[in-house]
Length: 101
Image: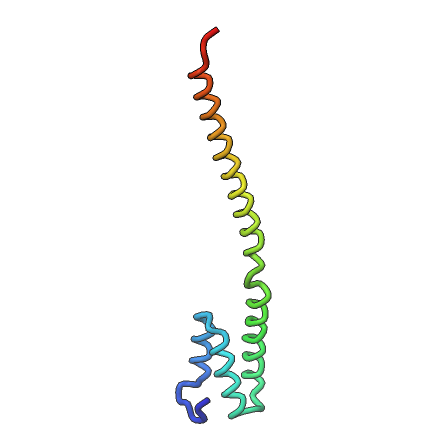
C-alpha cells in the first residue's frame, strides 16, 4: 500500500462503496484510520462497510440453491416430456401400420 496516496480519500471510499466495490472502500477507510486512528466517523463507516461485506458473503449464493433445484426439476420434466412424445409417436405409427380387422 502506498503511504501518501492522494486518491485515498473519504470521497473515493464512498464512491467505491456506492458502486459496490466494498473491499476497495474498506481498504481506503483502513488506510485513513492508520493516518487518523481516533476518528470515530471513519471507524463507523469502516464498520458499516465490513458489515455489508459480511452480509454479501453470507447471502451471495443462497438464492442459487432454489434456482438450481428448480432447474433440475425442469430438466427432469423436459426429459419425461420428450419420452412421452417419443412413445406417443411410436403408438401413432403402430396404429397406422396395423392391419384392419
